Length: 241
Image (cartoon, rainbow, N blue to C red):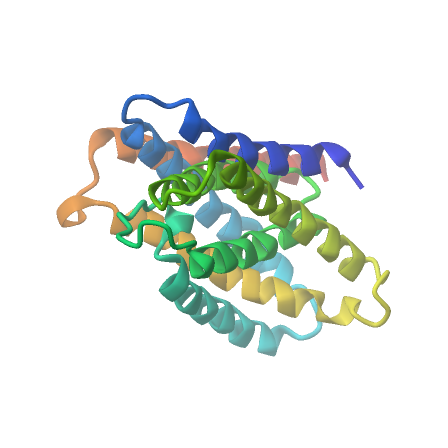
């Protein structure tokens, strides 16, 4: 078990959320570029690594069903999260209401995203997920601040969100090595669900935020960079085996 992965997952989300108190001017364009890079990277990693790995087991016929379940699960979660996992920040009119739906769905989403890391032998996925959680945590913190949640409570809820992906990673480690008795047989099915979530998240990030479905030059560069980095990792991993 590699402790540095837990630390990277935690601190990217934690510092991303904490930056709400440090950012004085509008950084939305920078957040969009980080989102575009991480979305393209996640999509490429899903296609290059996660899908082939999931289909390498004995239950190949069922994997597609679990990918569809994951895709639909993310559609359902977004009815409550309002797209915060894409870095979307919506104005909330309930001045002192705590957004429980957003918090709960975002935490479940982060927990599930941490799960593929148990099979992330070449560390391709850890950075994509960590980068993806920076704008998500910032968006969550922004909504909490908008809703007049006190600063110390905002930090507390950011910590809860930041712990979720490392917790998912730890759970999947236990699942894949059989520490949770008899559960290792379900690992690929769980991965199918996570693949469905990644496909929904990454394609939404790539296409939804483009005005008139046109991508500006900076976003296109970020997307190509994300895919390029994933391809470099893919070929480097191939030569190392």
